[in-house]
Structures are given as structure tokens and as C-alpha cells.
Length: 232
Length: 232
Image (tube, rainbow over all chains, first blue to last red; front, side):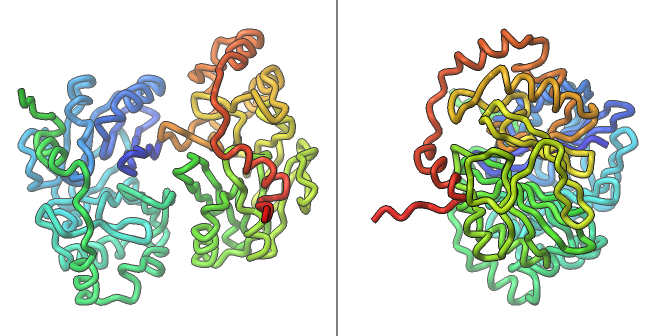
């Protein structure tokens, strides 16, 4: 398996390129519109065929690269079940598996940051957590039908049930971390370690964060799979 | 082996934390002064003992975290042979091996970006290239006794002789790439693929880059292993 973590510094977003080296089939998870040229060049250089653009959720902080990548490569756009993106080619429910060549990508429904959100368990040794579990943090729960109690359940009852040594690859990091493990987050994540559901909800409901800068543009665009509206 | 890539977004610098999980012995390669608190916290959380801070070279774009980490953890500061850092505890010559528990870190002298520069071949499957070979690029050669012809030799005669599948972990990246391979860089690095020595020297000598913002502070501080001079 080829596994590449890619970073968009403007929004501190991680995109993941995963490929089966035998068949050259590839998938991009959470591609960023502004990085489509970089990502497509990398696909070309590595001789990969992009089969899917896969989202963990409908993002509020950046526009997905899926629309452009679908046009350029004829890949399929895949989103979590019930995500408000009627434009998607495929919807993944909890437990469903997407195969990319011989690489197994299993959806784990992890709502809470948004009401439709999947983490993806890749080849049973690493999990892409999107904006549910972050390294020593977690996604906010104050818009897009987010719910702190739901996120607490997703993280503690689903992600934390994966083996301790599972590598955690998040959708964002703002401090320069690239990877963690489930065991490490259970022990050291300050939003979750030694905290009960009520205390987590109280913490999350009092973060008072400003809205993401691109939110008014990003959410409607991502509901169209990344197509930016023509307003003139 | 534990292997963590860490990023300093202000200077786009990668620091590497490597540890032997059996003995808990750890090393930081190219630590950044502004990230010492983050790195020390991570060492503590993982229960690791920092044995060494290792430099690929005397940096011009950031101050090393070595001075502070030596004070906090009593680790040793290690630099390439002939690096102008008399304060170092140990100097590594070409081919010399530093053991961190059972993890083998072999120095490969790769001058050219600066006149003393090592890459580090870790457990014979990945190489930390510092500012010699970057992903689809290379370090500049226009100060600190840099020399384009020397860098061409270091990259093409030493790094490119490693196995094609060797993972390349650079000292910086400015486009969001995190890792590459030797084979990929031989084929796709625009500064090196299909280019002879004369053409490389001409390219490098005409880049006309501005000096790094922190250069006047960073170089003298790094020659003191990261101690910032008291000027009052």
C-alpha cells in the first residue's frame, strides 16, 4: 500500500492519498480545492488511477477538490450516508467497506462534529478520523447539526474500541503533529481522558470559537461536491 | 521503532522523533527552538528518554531547540563532523552509526547546502535528508559555504545510490508533501532528473533567493547549539 499524508497550510487540512501498488488504483480522502493541481501531479507521477474522492464529512473550513478531480479524472465522489450532497456517486454507511485494489477502507460512522461523519479504518492498522478525534483534541460541535454528546459516544464507544496500537491520522492539526495512536489519545487527549459525558458536553458547549473564515462559501459548495456557485 | 514527523509551520521545518519502544530511548533530529515545549510534552507523554538531539547541519532559517533540550533533559547534542558548533557533545563522520536503543542511525555526509551536512539513514529503510534532497527540490547553495557542484555529487552519487524504495523524509517542505522515495526523486525531481552537473550548477547559481528571515539570528545561535546571545 502507498500511503501519503498531504497538508494544506492555509486551512491546516490533511488530505490522504492511498493506493494499491499492484493495481495502481488510488483514492484521495478529503482533497482540498486549492491543492488539486498538486494532487493530480502526484497521481500522474506515481502512475496512479484515481478511483474515488472520499469525504469524511461536509467540511466548513475548506472547499473539497472533488468536483474538479471528478472532471479531470472521472473518479467517483463518495460521502457518508445521509450527508447532504445529492451530487455524490456513492454513500457509505457504518461498517461498509470500499475496496481500492486490495486496500480495505471500512467506514465507521462517527457523527457529532457534523450529523453525518465517517472515520475510515484502513487495512485494519490505521484510522483516518476526519474531524471527530484529533491529536490531543477533537472537532468542534457548535454548527452543522453538531452535537457534543453524540461526538462523545462516537469517540469513546467506537474509535476508542479500536486496538490501542491503531495509528490515528486526523483531518486537521494545528500544532504540527502528524500522527498518533488510539492508546495515546485514550490516555492523553485532554478533552477525553478522565472526562465523563456531562463534563465533555459542558466543555464543548463553552468553547466559544469564531466561525471558520470560509464557512459561508465552503458548506454550500461542499453540498454540491465542491462546485462553487456562479453568482454573476 | 516509533517514528514521528513533526512540523513547524512558521519555518516549514520538519523535526523527527525516533525512539526504540523496548528501551524507550529517543532522539530528536533537527528540533526547533519554538517547539521545545511541544516536543518535550510529547516525550513525557510517551514515556521516552531523550538521549540525543541530532542536527543535519547548522541551520540558517530557524534556531535549534538543542540548547534548551540539553538543559531540560541532559541529552547530548550531536552534529556533523566539521560543523562549526564547538559546543556539541559529539560529531558524526560519514558512515558513522549512532544507536538509539536498537535503532540504527547512519550518517551519510551530504555537503553542498552547507559545507558540513549529514543525511541520516534510519534502520536502512528511510533517510532523513535535511536540506540536501527535498521532495521535488533541494536545498539552496548560495550561503554558509554552500556549493552547487558539491550538492550535485552528494545527491546523485550518495543519496541516489540508496535503494529506490528508501523513504525520503526531508528537513523542510513548502507545498504540503511529507514523504517521498529515492526512486521517485530520481525520476521526478525537477532540479535533478535528466540534468547534468553543469546544468544543475547553472540553475542553482541563478536562483536569486532572498536570505532567510531569521538568518542573522539563527546561524550564530546554532553555532552555539541554539543558545541565543545575551545582548544587553
